[in-house]
Length: 209
Image (cartoon, rainbow, N blue to C red; front, side, top):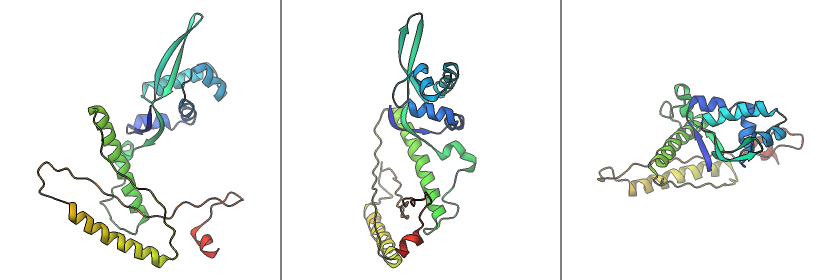
């Protein structure tokens, strides 16, 4: 089982988005059969079997083992991944294009970059798996608490300058046998916890505190 599965086929995306099938897929993070899943989901075994056949035919679940129970054979299945992400490649006709209107201060452009990142990494994972070769990647994830909007702007300017110098030092456009690598850096407000009444806090609320 993979930690994250990438869904690139529109038909597979459609299957995975069905609410009942999504629940069964989540339950199959641990091996299970139609009988055990029917009890968990409150469905008949026949209905569960129908959904399982669909999930299996689209590569979202796989057979782990078959057990004999009297005159019947019980099939034990498991999801092919612990979690899934749907690549923008599944919606190729309407996938965002970050080259269309680049704007460093646009949240929608950042989202378009993130979408391209998911699509490209998904394709690279698929290719590396088929070739049985490792995929060289690197990621950093951290949080910063800025005292003011001015500090945030100063940080962005210094980060841009530092990255430009670092890229200039290591980029070699004429390197024989070299390979291009994409570097994406994003900065956005962290999601805030909900209020006691369940509504979402806003950045303006926190600035007043």
